[in-house]
Length: 220
Image (tube, rainbow, N blue to C red):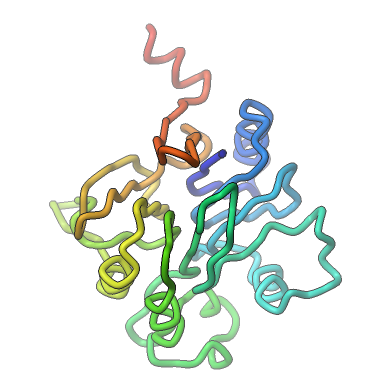
């Protein structure tokens, strides 16, 4: 199974990195953790929306809009779960905004559609028997950014404690990091222009594959 970090694939070079990962793995299924920005993908892909998306497309995916064909359409995980290659995969779409957290989804307009709200977090917390959980935001205890600050999100902490997946994958920070948080292996993924990952559905072994230019730099 192919696993992908942030793509920002509205940029042609980054789109090529995204598509080259599909070609390299010839995977039957892929998981992606947001900021996708390109939705005509060569294999079935389950993803969560990030804070940078075409939100008209994301809204159509939320509605299950029939004008998006099955061939073109990745599958959005928005406080929902799906069976993928023998795994139960779930996800929370969006990022956190304290001023909008208690709004309803219908109250979010324009760029504010990028956020998740409390009701969606509560729905995600009710999911059960989850093997792999996808989120754009990270929980606390995984990363340190400028000045040693932990950028974790308390709402994501709640989901991690409630759902107790075997593996929790996050994006947003464009950096690989791993930690055990609340007894769960949590991995922040590199963006697709730096590396892609493969996941063994039977063992949940996650392997990082740097793109050839990065691998070449490391060899010099």
